[in-house]
Length: 132
Image 1 (spheres, one colour):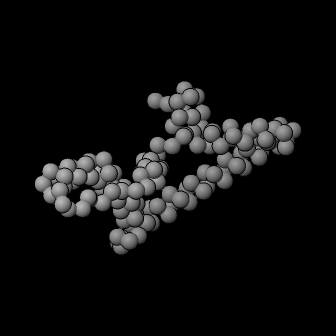
Image 2 (cartoon, rainbow, N blue to C red):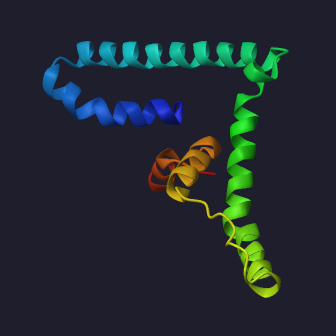
Image 3 (cartoon, helix red, strand yellow):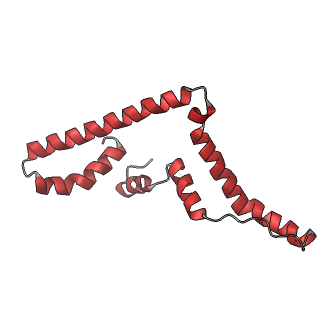
């Protein structure tokens, strides 16, 4: 049992590697090189993240929280505040124009789910029975 992302990547490329490289030793060597490269890329990204998070400027260190807050506010408007504003408008100000609606909710949810890490890898873990 290794790193779940690497296990998933290796499972995906295992069949093509078996067809391309029939020699077991060469194939294992190639799988090792792929996993090593993926680990190095992940470590490099972690270093970039640490440098960004330590930066004093909000424009460097604050872009992830800013995207999260924008997603949270947009979802709150779309699912809660818009209905309340529409009710108030219809009840008390019938001649006023309707409150602005939010378009592109699918894109917003995609960004939010990506930020929260709710992608397919968790499903793969559950299917393999390795989730906690």
